[in-house]
Amino acid sequence: MKNIGKTYKYCPSCGLKYEKEIGFYYGAMYVSYALGVALFVTCWVTINLFFPNANVFAQIAAISGLSIFLSPYLYALSKIIWANIFFSYDPDAIAKFKKDQKV
Image 1 (cartoon, one colour):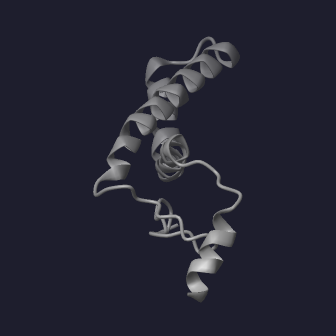
Image 2 (cartoon, helix red, strand yellow):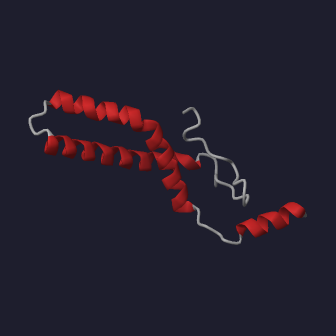
Image 3 (cartoon, rainbow, N blue to C red):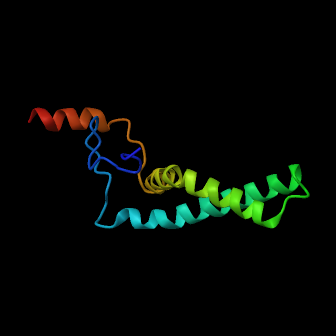
């Protein structure tokens, strides 16, 4: 659980540098916010559909508890999504990396 959200500096297979610049993953906060809003809306709609007579405080407690429980996973997922926006797959990267390592 303590390693959730940690990233390698370089890919162990192809040598791709995962951090383009210092503070690169600060942009993942925007993705994390969007995931948090999506979680809130999904929980709120689900609670109102299946428990239409639910108390407002019960809804707040359920959504807050789920948000706290899932926050490490949302943080890790937001970093993954943020990195996938900027990094693309290069099928020749492994061959280039192995060639560079031999030299």
